[in-house]
Image (tube, rainbow, N blue to C red; front, top):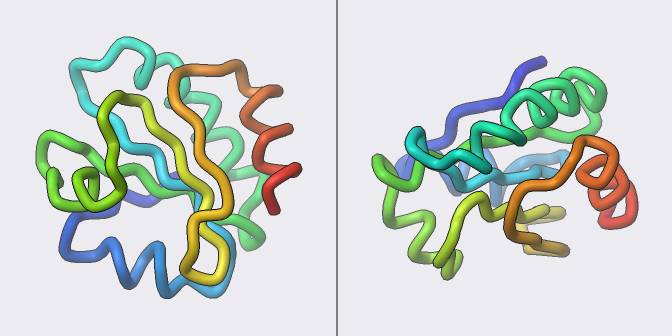
Amino acid sequence: MSTVAVTDATFDAEVKNSDIPVVVDFWAEWCGPCKQIGPALEELATQYDGKIKIAKVDVDNNPNSAAAMGVRGIPALFIFKDGQVVSNRAGAAPKAALESWINDSI
């Protein structure tokens, strides 16, 4: 499974109401660090297929979700479990660090 594009309109259904944990990546096309972690998130989406959903929210096109989460800088990553934020982090990181963060959070 690849990452899932989430919009303001689908945020609650895809993230808050998901029956599996969700990693949400708030990003933008112009953001260099966002592009750096993109391939790692795609790999992790495949690796955790069926166990974790990895969602991407483009902050330029979906400002309401980012504002509701208090996102001030990107990339901003949040892990939701049972509709609640259980962990968050900001900035780019290598795949191994992201994987460790996910494993520690779920």
